[in-house]
Image 1: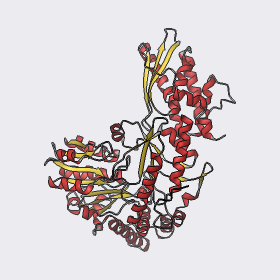
Image 2: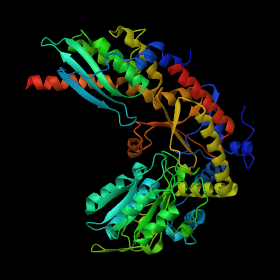
Image 3: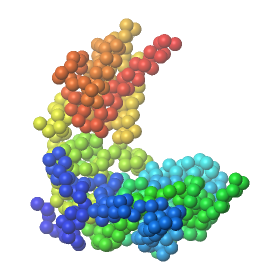
Length: 414
Length: 150
């Protein structure tokens, strides 16, 4: 039985679960318990149906054709951009650039911002708990431009050490790139403060929002951040779509990343002039259906309310943390005071890969591995962790099932 | 019987807890480091091979999951006293078994107890765990062959 001292979901949970058809299925004879939401989230009917309707009735190319289908598609595509702008908190939809996801968004900034603003001897700061997608592009940028990569250390709880960050900042710092929520540990970073401190030395800030966008109310303008990235498939939308918020004054100064059709003003054999943002950064036919689906996902999230989502997911996380803490063989990695949606843990008795195989036999989907964050694993001297990541469609009972299945696995291995 | 019981059989669990030949080998004639970047399994396999191609000793060191560790443990136990040719045949058979191309109950093979790992074929994500040290063993042998043929 679930503890009674938990906060009930602030919405009709069973109704919400019915919105997600995938959740109904049985896996190995047990009801599916989907706890890999940090990797990718499931899709509600609202997204599935919207994409289906668009593909079957409304599909046309965007920004090109002067005919019914194309004009309709273009209008819906632009509306989706407005929805995303609203979700992130910018009044200017032209500050939203669609990309294939966070990885491409960060690569875009590392390339284009790098080309425009990073010179030899400059410095770029990341943290010790970044996803490889927010590590490797900056390593490449530094290598190509002769810049230096500096790393903000973390304490044992998984919190960035801001005193050390302050020491790294100086007038040579061109950009600071950190995540809002760590995908490996669940730490919520104090990005408002990080941004403020960077701006004091004239540095720009990119926030990797892959793990935060679906879990909390955002306001890029209030945060005063320069770049913010997100992935559609982690926010109940289609895969292959995501994007970048960029401050317009910076986007205007940045050269294109990918070039080709649709991003140009005029092309002659001698010279090409580029469109203003966002079009400058969206060469080629975009993933149109995916953008429409993303717009539907934004509507769905806002319909539930990001504040309510954050509250309930926080209760789930606290509950799961308590349940796992009761198992003596388990050690939670990442115990920051501010956390969101992610529970990462290890055991001396059983390796994460064996854990996830055994959990799967009980219908529970968790991730075991380094979570594309090998420097984080190295910091905590573990080869891998098991990660359970919650969503608003999860139930307390599912965390009970996780704890029970873990006890069983540990017993088998003891 | 559920698949997990078939995968995590008592012998496999025992080799995971008490791996055999789990040591570095100072007088190894061959060694090869194997790493699975996907999940971080990380082992070095050591072999001591006589001039007439008999594997006199085999051991391994490193870290990883129960499947990779018990597979390495049982492989090293199996290899001792075998010829390098027999080791290569066993690798082929083991690989075919865990990828589902060979049913040890229906076909002739030389794997003996190693047929316990047949359950791995139901878990495509774990095939690499079971075969990592086998690949390292072959890697070690081939390196040596290359050296000797030069």
